[in-house]
Image (cartoon, rainbow, N blue to C red):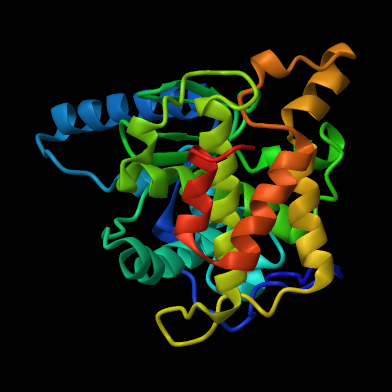
Length: 301
Ligand SMILES: [Zn+2]
């Protein structure tokens, strides 16, 4: 039996909704697992060599990290779990995003939605886009169409960036990264000149559009159904919206620069100002329209 934690925040996920715990791949502390896996593999090889058998149940050789991760995964079964742990909230949010975009993307753009891979890591992990670490923050890598996220970033949102840290603030981060995946599918990531930094340039516009796509999901999430026909999210409250906007604003380039260096340098912006990120999320939330979000790429900011 799991002890019910004394969680008293808004129960944003419908507690009866069903989750697939395997939707998010878990990678334990990079080096720990690599070493553990190495020893495990060596033991398998030794065992095979000694006994002449080629197979062995690997589960009997799991190191502590791996069994801990397996435990964490197996507990993410319902929306109630998502309301209690950041790890499970990540799983539930990705599944909700899958359902939302599976319906919405073809309906609005004619493009079929394919699910991105979602990885949860702690410490660091490698990706085709470079090494992911807790310090780099969450990101989407187009080469393997994968969202990389260390749920520890949720704590940083509050402690380092001053976000409210409410559930929808965390879900917004996931929705933003899946927004990049949607951009990848519609070809926007290739065309937007995403490397060009500075206020009003390609990178800022791409990022603001991803915020807007996150807002679209927030609007649709309360009516999106899981496999058993239950809605993932309960209708959003004003507090939920405030949480998401708080998260969007807290990671604005101006606020991050101000906190880090005491100065604001719009020429080096990659994601847009707090006010721009707030407005972009709001545009998606209020319109629910992909076309509205895509206009951010070309129109005056
Ligand atoms: Zn982004």
